[in-house]
Length: 270
Image (cartoon, rainbow, N blue to C red; front, side, top):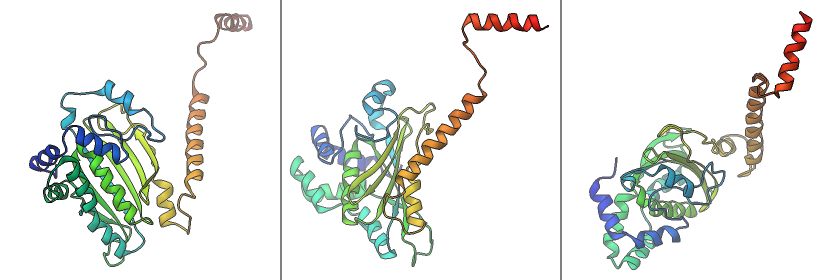
């Protein structure tokens, strides 16, 4: 992973135990003793409360979370500013942690910079940096730091309210994944896949990014205007698959009387 043991241990020492729990709660995320999405994840296939007891594993506290973040900005200047801010934790966040844990602000700020080290993966759309305004970033971190990371992302999103943050996250050891659409500091839509049949492989993770990408790259659309049409189309497509499956299934579990009568009728015809 990109983050070394020194980073994780240092920051977790500063924010251990109840301090980390309080920070996560104040950031708007429930703390479950490890990584994962909040309890109120919309379109969830399974709640985290149900998921963790059933799939708890040894050393889960040492597992890591991967974030793939696509940011859709409105100009090359804006995407460059966002890229810079993603790697610059706010003084407000550092001060808040320092006050709570009675630690020097400078020491907390240093730990946050090491933790929140978003790597640029590639430019999206126009690859030329002079015209590019969308970019993909990646971050890996220990699951117990997810409340801090999410709090930082919300702050950056608030600072750039017109930009769209498409966050895909996963923990292969804990076998869950999810997607969030964030704008103006708010989680607009979210889907969570906590019922993976094979460790590390998505099972029922819908592509909720599709309508927002279509709005961004297509014709002029108001933000969120394609959500309902996309959702209706997705439901219709799933129903069509189900109807097709039902139409090809053999007729089974008929009452014994019906089966017997059918056999008798067939014999008489012969």
